[in-house]
Structures are given as structure tokens and as C-alpha cells.
Image (cartoon, rainbow, N blue to C red; front, side, top):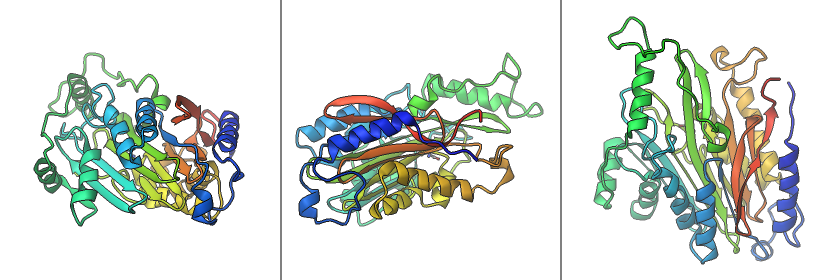
Length: 368
Ligand code: GLY
């Protein structure tokens, strides 16, 4: 099995390390005195590839003195409210029954706070509800109807989250499910619902399965401010056409998101089941705690996903996962990185006010 590191990512990573870790050196274990670590951090916001506006917003809010959690949540709200992003919030692709069910979690480094919601219906910005769970309850995770009732009690409006576009894609998918059921076949039999044109950029992952191409998108955004304080958020509509009630990694603290204010922040996109089984984001943080760079820590967690993928239905002819998982991580020094199982993924980053996409490191080259 070939393993490669993206040269672009490596170059950018070194540039980021050099710029952000003034006087600290790169990839040093994060066991030093907080008094030392809290000086000279260049603020950074990092997100999945569909998070260009998110990192831009988060960085701007942090630059104005805003709290890191407020910054990342405001950042992903832009994408959650965007009807054209079918991976999260309003316009997110629905479940098997045509119902949009949303998952989200937040973690606030300085207060060690966490909040999450799962299977939440009818609320455009589940990340804000997750933040409300953290701030206004003694709990961490609320699900389903209870989560929605809580959201309403906090002033969130219940709305129809299906757009004309997401409903059309669901109807097309339903029509392809079987040629023996009561749904009429689409006009062009055999036509596959096209994936997003720029999947790698949008963070949407494509899982080929018996019923065709299944979009699996999410947004994760993590940030560190000039004091070295960290926060993160992950929010998603989850796997398109999922079994009602299915919960992915995004609202699971330690899986789709983890923040330790002594170390860093990490989140994931891609096949949530694989991330849950490997406690993905938590394991990235633990690797960074022991001295790994963010990029290397992400790659190490992805190797564990590969090891845990034993099901024949989830492996390609070479025994490698036939799906993708992405991690995005930033440490307390402002060093950052992203990695995916398969090449071609990119992540969004904003440092020094400049938003851009960078190539993720990867384990396997597509087509190899
Ligand atoms: N990573 C998003 C999900 O699997 O639901």
C-alpha cells in the first residue's frame, strides 16, 4: 500500500509552522509552560474545503477580540444557512424518508465546555443549538424531538429545511431504489445523480454503494486565537438517504470533534462510522499531545481507520477503504494541517487575514 504526503501541503505546513510558531520551533511536544505557549501565537481558523467563508468569518471575529467558539460557530452558520450547500443545515440532503436530520457538536477550549445535538429536525443552524446545550444545560448531547423542543425553547425557529434542489435529488434517488417498487423510474434509466462538481473543495465525500453515489458532506471549523485559546465545531446533514435516526460522527465528542485547550482542536468529515469506531478526533489530539505535528497526527488517525476497515463491502480491490475520511487540526501554537485517506482533498484556512485552500496530505493516491 502506497503512502504519500502532499508536497503542497508539506510546503504550506512548513510555511505555516515558520510563520505561526515564532520562537517556539515546529512540532515540539506541547508540554511546555503555558506562560511560554501563550505568547506569539498567530490566530488561525481551519475548516473543511467547503468552509472558505467560515474561516474568513471566524478569523475576522477573532481579530476583533471575539471568543473562539463564537467565531467558529458564526463561521459555519454561513454555510448552514446556504441553501446551495447540500451537506449541512438548510438544503442539506435528507434521510431515506425525505426528512433532513442534522447533527452538530461544539467544544470551547478555555471553559472545557461541550455541547451537541443529533437527529435534529427543522432548525437551520444546529451548531447554535449545540452551543446552547453547552451554555444552558447540564448535559452534553440532546437528540431528536427533545433536541428540537429545547431549540424552540431557546428561540430557534422550526422551518422546512428541504429546498427545491434537495427535494429533487431525493426524489431522483428514491426512483432509482428498485425497479419493482411503486416509484416510477427517472426519465433516463441508469443515470447517476451527479456528485458535486467540486467535491474535494466542498468537503463532500462520495461513497459508492449498491444504490449509487451517496453524498456525505459536513463542515468542521477549528480556531486558535492569539492567546492560544481554541474552539471547534462540526455540523452536518450526514449521509444522504440515511436510515432515519442514523447518527454520524459529527455530534460525537471525541469522534467528529475534539478540543483540548492545552493541545489543539481537531474535527472530521467523511464516513462517520469509521471515525466513531476509531475515536478519530480524540486520537489526533492525543498524538499532538505526544509531540506529533497536526498533519502527522491526522495521518496516524487515518491509518487506524484503514486498520479498522475489515468489511469486504468497504474495501477496494487493493484492500483499502472505498470511502474517504478527512481530519483538520490546529495546535496551540497555531500550526495546522489536514489529511485524508485519498488524495485530492483540500481544506480551507485563514491566517493573517488571508483565506485560501490548501491540499490535504493523504495515505493513498486516487487511481493507484
Ligand atoms: N461525517 C459526517 C457523517 O458521517 O455523518
